[in-house]
Image 1: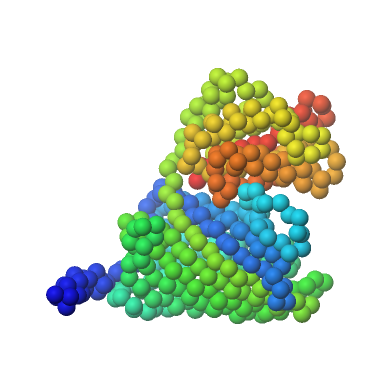
Image 2: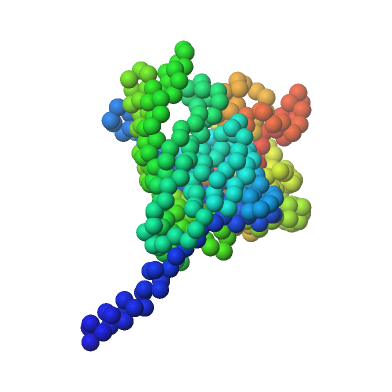
Length: 405
């Protein structure tokens, strides 16, 4: 009996195991989605752990046109980071949200097999021509290869002005169906190794050799014609001109989230009505390029600090309740100051005040930490005249932006 059951299971599994798969990108004009990637990274310096960090990469993508299977794609890449453990700071507080690091715009073409056509001036995407596919059905465990490259932004760290290119060969294997969040998807593995010797940079420390290994498992959505998620392990080392070795190792997980178009004007009008009905003072709502922004003007902090005054918590509680009505949208909390003190002190204060508001929202379950980004502007974006007391009062604000994509 056991042999018959085993044989029956084997026969039933044959069609699923032997099923060939064709991987192709589908580009639908007007489609929008975002890619959320969270990186858990350990940084070693000369063989000893320096710190651990989490990096949040948020990519907003729109297919603006498609011709003969090629998609014309616009994307905004936003990178944020938070240190979760630091050997150099034993008294550090628990991490709160992700702090904005940098933002990049990019535009490129991608064909149905995954090959990109892009102006070399763009820094993003970092990894290009991964994945790419052969133009045929793939059998289980079939292998293929493709040429790809990485583009790195070394302007701030090493003074290399142009995007720095590192070529590699990526190797793939179709591994059949794998589960992602309880659902089966056709999947493949991708791995590649990089090795490069960047040019010397006069007057500063620079990498004399960059080497690394990357391994991914990619889950594919047939209906979308796009990967739905990926998991990655990486290990990359920078050998510096001052004989210091910096090693980055860790894991990354990314997921594609389809975005519905936001009726910004309607959302802004709804929020404005709610604020008026609640009688919340010094709060303004406006439509911005990223979505809808709620500006908390003259929010009360202790002087020159990021400690929220007790009387402001009721206002924040009311704003928190409003934000909970839009749970599918990520948010950015940005801090702004009046024109007083030094540029550095203004920037630091604006970041810390944004962090304090984000902390309140986190503690009240408005969003999870990976869906809140913190950003400081100092006095870079005034909304009123800093030469008057009223203008300075309005410029001391925190803005919460509900993102469209």
